[in-house]
Amino acid sequence: MIPTLTTERLILRPHRLADFDAYVEMWADPDVVRFIGGKPFDRESSWSRFLRHFGVWQLLGFGFFAIEEKETGNFVGEAGFHDLRRNIEPSLEGTLEAGWALASGGQGWGYDTEAMGAAIGWAAGAFPGRPMTCIINPDNLPSVRVAGRLGFSERARTSYFDSPVVIFERRPG
Image 1: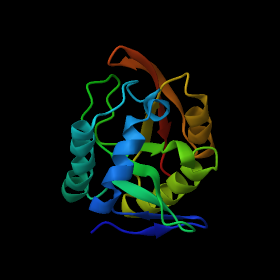
Image 2: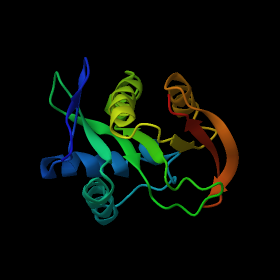
Image 3: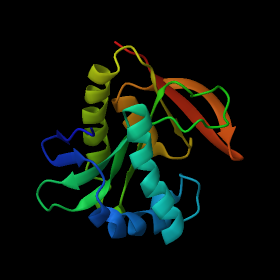
């Protein structure tokens, strides 16, 4: 079962079919994908990505949460964990790979830090002792700062799909 987490301003909950149009809009925004592959997603690609969330939760017991603003009820992004079996060295397999993305309207409010802080708190209790990782394009300074605020530190520099990335790790405890 996918938990629902609440923070001062946000509700982290399972994705809903009603989120899909906002989800498509978010992943089609060049500003959102600038450091996440660099290419906007079309509706079909967004659907595949959307469906992946349900499978990750079902198979691994963790996944991404939809982020909803408490005040408005609007879908403003997603945050959580996955294990995508990436073809990357050093390997991230077996870790809780953290990730977050916010729609343009949700950026600049600290929602990423707030949402991931709640997700990390949940995951630390549900998967004690399991390391957490994330990969970030080194030019994505806002996300690098968020990772630092969340207790992640640089583990390695490498490339993924011919783009430079920094692998960050957050050790248990």
